[in-house]
Structures are given as structure tokens and as C-alpha cells.
Image 1: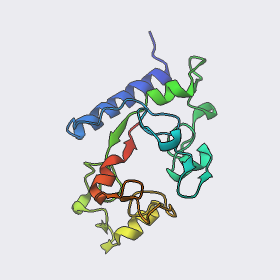
Image 2 (image 1 turned 180 degrees about the vertical axis):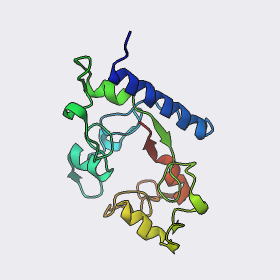
Image 3 (image 1 turned 135 degrees about the vertical axis):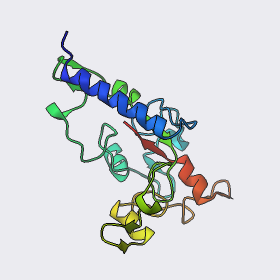
Image 4 (image 1 turned 180 degrees about the horizontal axis):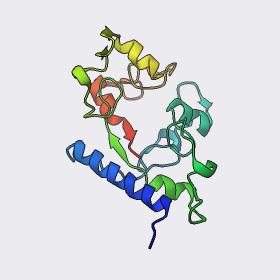
Length: 190
């Protein structure tokens, strides 16, 4: 029996995910449980019930704007992803559709970012992404992150924080280290 292209694609994606997990040394927290409609881990709890409300400014944002700040599209994929048929929810080969929730439930995420806002465990030629071995030129961390449209906290450039930065929680008066903050972030693997 012939496998459809979609089945072949899913099989290849599963192999990539499997090898990615093996490459990360099967660390705790690298097996995903799916994403919610805000592209956060499905078990994420929000103050006020939604991440669309900014308590510091008292303003709401749209889901699209919230996801755009994370450089994600409505399907929690990179913002520039293009789909055959216009949507990942419809399988042209089988003629079947799935819900957004079912699609998001299949996504995987890994906790933690390194100091360069890349997934923990990312290896770099020369040990750092700040030096281009091909050109022999170095760049600053701020410039490297700005090219990715990120600030030093791995949030979208221009993000405003209550208390001045995300390391301080004005409601509790507690501070955390940058490493702890980055460890709480997640990366979508698929």
C-alpha cells in the first residue's frame, strides 16, 4: 500500500523530533504536552486568565499581536511559514481537517533558552554565535539579538515591563536571575 505524502511528511517530522530529543540528551522537560491557543505550554496559568491583558498598562492586545510579538503565526509556527493549501489544518492528500486545538496538541516544546535566546543545548561553531568564522567578524550580543527582533530577555524588541524589567515582580517584590527567567521560557520544536 502506498503511503501518502502527508503520512511520509509526518513520519519524517517524527524522526526529526526523535533525533532532536536524543540530541538534547533526553533532559527532563523536553517532551512536549501540546500548546494552548496562545502558543504557550497547555498547562500555563495566566494572571487574569489570559496573556492578552497587560496589567501594567491596563490594555488588551489581540491574539494576532500577541503571537506576532513571539514571531509566531495563528498556528504557533514561525510567522513566515507557508502551507500547501493555505492551512495546516487541512490535509489535501486525505481530504480531512483537524481542529486548531488538535493541531496544537501535536506540537512539542522544550523548556529553556540559552543566553542567546536559542534552545538550551544549542551548539555553535567556535563556541559562540557572536563570531562569524567565515568572515572573521564579531558582533555584540545586543546586535545579535536585535537581528532576531529580541531584547536581552529574549522578548520582542520594545517589550515594556512593569518594574522596568521582567526579572522583578512588583506584585511579590521578588527578583530572579536572568538564567532563571530564560529557563522558564519555552521553544516550540514542532
